[in-house]
Length: 327
Image (cartoon, rainbow, N blue to C red; front, side, top):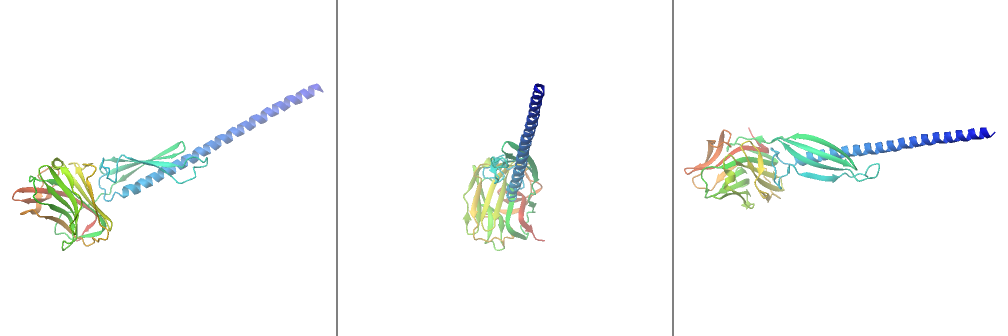
């Protein structure tokens, strides 16, 4: 009888050990599966956040109205802000299945040559990170031959850009305007330019004798092989923006100074009648015409503003978006 009781006790202990082992194993598996599920959930949320970052950056770069060169570096006012970390931005969710912090993403834009921009988006959910990259290629602007007799059409908001560099006449003794105008010339949007021995001044001008503050640039920034890259952006019914950058002979654009932009209001104004290139000057005896480029920054013939005294200004690489040339 005692042996039977002893055997029963041993079997009871063994059964308890088996049940404990099975229970512990099951609990461990459940914990592992739960952790794996949380990690998978965090991974999915981090991936989704990274995708959101890509979409945000695509929209962000799409708003670089008329961007034809992603190497506009070092300019705080530049929309591209290449190399800057954007974010982190939070995703509006409930923190995942474990109730942690909301998922976040941060984005970095990197230029890959003049035409490509690499978007790197890092999504984070709790301690899980997922990174995605996406390359966009700038569609650029449409080149437009600089023909003062061309009939143009503006489709609303538009971008006009061109390169300028100074000729052998340093003191302009007047101003030069480059932009767009209507038939009668009483409506226009243009860049104003004047030069002396120490500096050049550039400003934004529109009809009604509206002018922005002048952007002053040391004269050396117009010396060969550098030119100035001028971009005029008109946002219909809202504002007009002028930006001035430095352009080398390979087409790379860099910042001159943090304040090399100018703005004027276009509220309540309609510029749909602009249909001609504008190239005018109040300098006595000045003529406009095509000239062979005598500096390496030019490509073939360039538009030249000149007089018997010599060359005042060269204009080349005219391009636009939102402006079409009529047949």
